[in-house]
Length: 157
Image 1: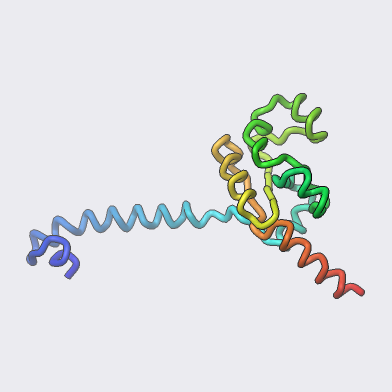
Image 2 (image 1 turned 135 degrees about the vertical axis):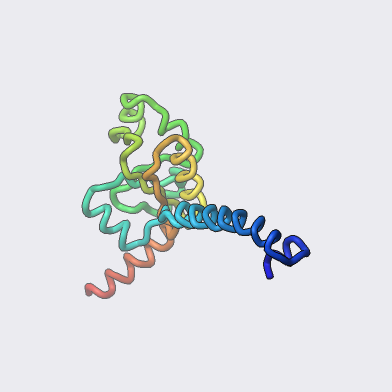
């Protein structure tokens, strides 16, 4: 039926010419599904666990004023979005001097956060384009973090 729709004909010759193409498309589709399904976002629970294990560098990409006014996730460092690309390409001495942290290597696990996930996604994409292939982002951002933290505090008291 697909051969008829695609080629407007029927018969073995048409099927014979379509089957290899369909096989190739199926192969491409499977590969793209595997690539696209690679998890690049972390949940609140995953982030809490990673922070407790000290297995990540959490980078808050909001501007400094936002962080001063709203607060930040404990353990995060601030590198505003417009500085991320430059910061990840700095030499280690300059990075340490500016951000008071050891510069991450390309194999280190980076997680980016912001207010609600838009800027952190951009920062993650920048990091990946620079070879930081383990980069992820916390899509819930500060808004979600605060909501969960308040909820957990209420449950504990």
